[in-house]
Length: 256
Length: 270
Image (spheres, each protein chain N blue to C red):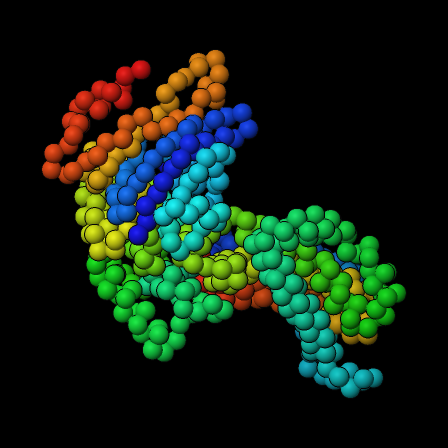
């Protein structure tokens, strides 16, 4: 269970308003895709859910409780880059989450408990098609393989919420179809609520059950920092029939 | 004709090019030595190769008449022992200090400026203090090297810890890592290769401090011997010792490089 409630949320850095008066309720197991121009607070919103930034005003609640002020295993994250551990093999990268939870002081598992963890890790490796690369280091993998591993690494701890910050932004367009299939499969199998930032409009429609567009409602050309962004479009997607055709949204976004 | 910047030597050619400066140096020495000895057979400044062989025999094979020890190996053993103990202590201080400063913002605020200031004190300037406080024995010599080397290693290692992508540290926390596990399973393993790099870079100054300490107060050691025989202008002893020291330092550097490649293959850039 992980519903997210946002009430009158503001985020400011000094005089710069990043997000203003954000109100939102996201139900459990929703797949929320987020798009918007760069610098309009999408990543800031994600970082607040992650717990590395705190709201200036208002409330950000997960299942009615305020988001803890630091990252934790209930909220997984996949960044565009750098979320793998270069000194660990593919398998060890995947095992790490299980070893953290199973061994408080050594961070390593032995014997029967290791075998259980190993089994889980290997079946997940199989699912993301990386079992042949299990002993390689991350730097030996292609960008697509690295991101698949990074997603699996986050999912293995079974977070309630999975946050994806442009996870496929640095990948070739050719591989994104595979990545979409993997992420949808993991989402269905793991009962997570997903928030995913993307620059790809098509992707945002294809993947999500709900699309949020972040943008500024008002803009003062003499003082661009005066007003923050908020959710300007909140579009439920039911996969089969989009409530708003792609073309009209593109037109709406291109408008003033 | 390709540009000069695109001209690469073959592997044999690279070897020959690398050997060239050494050969030139040796040739220049032999020429200078022969010229001076032709003018004055008693010249001590550039001894003939035969003199080196004699010296090597009396220092490295035969026992010293007064002490009954083979001086070459006595000196080498004493110096290496000091150096290795000092480097070991420095590495330990460096990795613990670097990890603590790099991983914990509170420790960084507490010790960062202090270590930076410490690293700026010229170690030789505090050598008298070390001799006064610790006596003229082994402890003062080791302390000098540690003082000269450890702050640099701490700074280098903590800089590396600071360079680790924030994303990695956040990710580890979302996987449930405590501060302890973050330090021991994520940060520390990535600092070892940098520790070896730092040791390699400080090896030169470690030798400098060793020889300085030995020159001032010692009864054996490579630096002690060089400064002892200086009084007799015994270039036939000094030059082989210098070459030997260079060889030892070079070997240590090579061993460290090999250790890094063997133990941390993931950190090799190519």
